[in-house]
Every structure is written in structure tokens, then in C-alpha cells.
Amino acid sequence: MKPIERSEILDYVTYGEQREAIRAAALQAKSERRILVGEHFTFLFENRETVRYQIQEMVRVERIVKEDDIEHEIKTYNELLHPAGTLGCTLMIAIDDEAERNEKLRAWLGLNDHIYATLPMAPGKAHVGPPAGRGFTAVICAVRHVRARSRSASRNRNRNARNRSGNRAISGPKGRAHARLRR
Image (tube, rainbow, N blue to C red; front, side):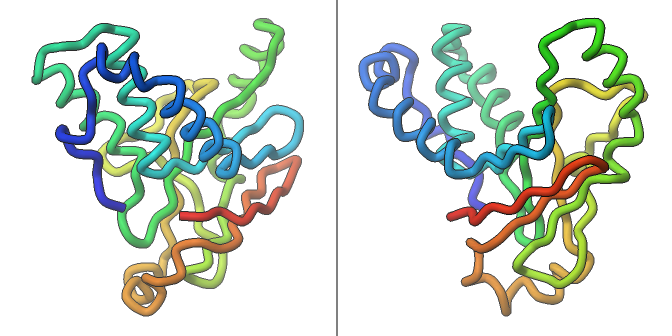
């Protein structure tokens, strides 16, 4: 997926003037790209629209004006856009009670061994891991960015380039969900 470029990011004043329409479109895109698994897990499959929205919101909320700082936000959020042969998403774990959340997060340190995606670009399961250049720590966070990479994706990349939408499945130790995602 093509990374977000600096020219696509509005200054926070201009964005503020257009925010209502941009936000509505981004929230619609997110609703179509969200999968709930079990009681606590939400997977949000990012695309250019959702990532660009996140960057714009950071620039607005933090009133970022320095070019280096804007470029840093772009670089950080571009990691959520998946290269060919992968599927990137944000995993959100929602548990309201803080004590219960802390207990479960400690118990779920090996969670990534149980999460996989079924991708249209290759048969079999694509196991989830951190984006390139990032490792998982000994602590699981309530929000983390993950990427599923098919073992055979690089062989099938060209053949399936036109099949970028399709069914995705996410399974974990206590739940399974399917969704049809558009580009």
C-alpha cells in the first residue's frame, strides 16, 4: 500500500475547517474495516484513509507545525500500512476494569501465538507479529500494531495483486471472526 506523503497532510487550521467531513469518511472506513473477536478483542485493518486521519488528528491535537515533527508522525503511522503480501492492523483489547485488564494482559503475554489471519492472497494461516523493525516486549499493551504475513505471499504477490479485497479471518484462543474488507 502506498505510504502517506507530506503533501497529503493539511495544516491543523485547514484540517480543523474540513474536519467534520474528513472525520465522517474516516469513521465510516473504520467501521467497515473493524472485526470484533470474542468479548475483548477488536482488530482494525488500516488503510490509507484511516492512517491519514490518524496523522491529521495527531497534528491537530498536538498543534504540530514543525516539518520534522510532522514527518515523524507520517513515518510512525505509515508503519500501519501494509506492504505487498502482508495485512496490517491495530489490535485493541478492551477491558473496562483496570485490575481485571492488568491481570488479563499479564496472562496473555503469549497471545500472538494464537492469532492468525486467513488471507485471500495465499492458502493457510498467516501468523501475526509486530511490524518490521519492531519487536514485542515482555508486556502486552491494550493497543498494539500487528502484521500478518503470508509465507507464500511473495510468490503470489503479482498473481493476486488485483485481489486486494476479500475475506479475512482472525482467530484467537477464544473466538473467531470473518469480515469482507474493501481496499
